[in-house]
Image (tube, rainbow, N blue to C red; front, top):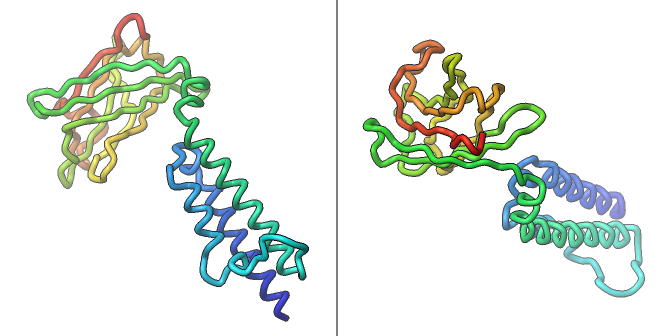
Length: 210
């Protein structure tokens, strides 16, 4: 009975660790504390790993299972540390075609500015917008980003900035060469799909980067 309970405890911990590692955000933007979070699973109260004998032959199924899981946690933690340290290098190597340009605040947001980073992907153009000095949208409103060209405006995403992050990921399904200008407007909820015309940020992709 005790061995069965031990196996259940180890299996529960394994599922917890697996769930942690399956989170997309763990690998999309690897957190610097991933190593500690993995090891925390190892140290959780009631975990069989608290009683693992680090050296010598395992004495039971419980110890064999626990030792195997301990090795897995240590390997994952080490890999996480390597990934965290190499994140900048990996980004540079796998996404060398990133293009950046600046957006400036208008009279509606004089202290605001932003930097847009463009990347071509199989799904469209990924646009990462990092804002500064732009307050969160007031209740009942939201921000909407647009690209503009000879054929008019194309919406590329909405956001509100009411949280702690100033990073927004937008998507364009049209070629930025044909829509070289970008704006961000304040939109009223329930106001329809058209632009309000209340621009808070605007910028253009330099010709050499389209």
